[in-house]
Image 1: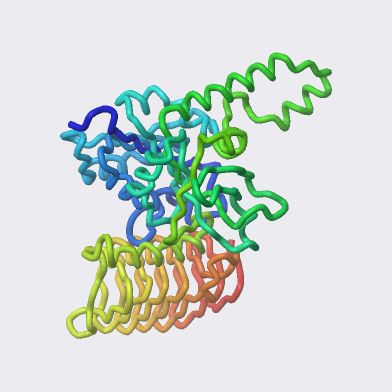
Image 2: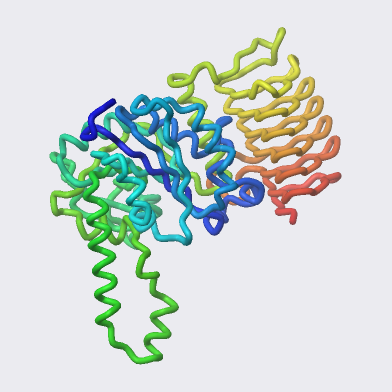
Length: 421
């Protein structure tokens, strides 16, 4: 067993049902962290990355979904993971009673997190799509000698204000300044939502909680002012990692940065889940080539580019699949069908000569013969891809373009740029 000074604990923040509303209608059926991307639940990708960290002791998911919503997945992944620190790997879902903020949630489960006396805590947001260079980042963090290290990335100046912008010393990589989603441009270097901390982070959070409590005790306001502030103020045990920890401690030789030159995205919308599915499928070429399908159109379907097909799916040999396609369990793809840049979920049926491009087809949906379901492929636009919710039936010879269709609908006429409730 590795010495306690080498142990690492990973914590993945998964949010809860009040979050991820932009992910509808797909999150109506499954918690956003469990939505399949490149054939695996969204949260599976950061979990797999964490499992490659040397001396990993435990992985925790923290969120405020009901435990039953994660029970089956937690059981499945616990058997799949092989963490060398323990004979049987430890994997737990910790449910918050209410939202405590990105730092407050970490602190509320500090006794669990520290029970193995880890030397480092890896903290990730679930809806981050990345190659997750965690082992290299951990080594850099040890060399820096600070309390924490942030994964950072360069983006265009136009999009930077959608994220936490920061300034780092170009020689030492020390975090000098941090501001969350500023109104004016600060830097094209942004926070990626992936961190490595020493256990000192828990003391830093405790300091913030004490300061909030002291301010609350000292505040003397009139009853009208108190009522007004109560409607705007955050709960006293709500601590944000960015505003409450990173911003005030920047420039104090406590925090450092590690820049990734590989892919990074946030998965906030269904459109971005489709883009990230393609990124992960491309990564599989290097990390998990056994997950990618192959075929030449003779005995199996013609496969173009990176494609994942679940072993239980049935795909006709005359169909053509790819690039960037993920086909889930028990799906059926008929003769002559053409699939490009799409996610096909469980129990979907795509009939003969149907075409699906830049789309997500929901569970138990069906697409009729010679029908066409297509988006324009703009992953950031509201109607940039087509999304069919659960149990949507597109009848024969119907065209659906740049539309969102909520569950349990039947389409017998063509639609374009519509949201069908």
